[in-house]
View 1 (tube, rainbow, N blue to C red):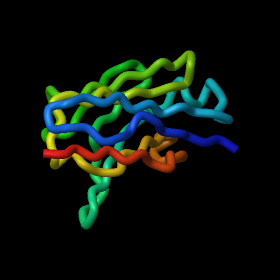
View 2: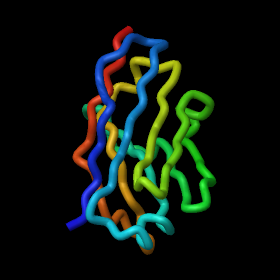
View 3: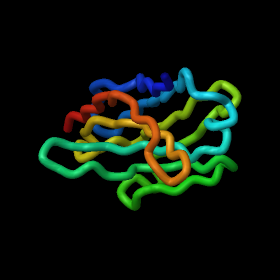
Length: 119
């Protein structure tokens, strides 16, 4: 059974940085290598929102709220995806989850990692 596991969350002051990781296991390489990967986040009382996604070829897009501050990347050979969070703001506080999008559906989700930014 395939799964995604996030790590790297924590508590940081405003203006600080974190690096989140999303490691895939039990997902065959041929699926991972052609899939789009994405990070979502959900803050208390708010809907889940797309933060960033990266396509199999490496092209990435970002939510306007994080453009220029966050960077998504992937190491397909190692089946890992990253999200570098810089210049963090209190409004970035949320549970961040990674997902693998296969044939148009969110085939796998991680359990989420908490990011808390203090002012």
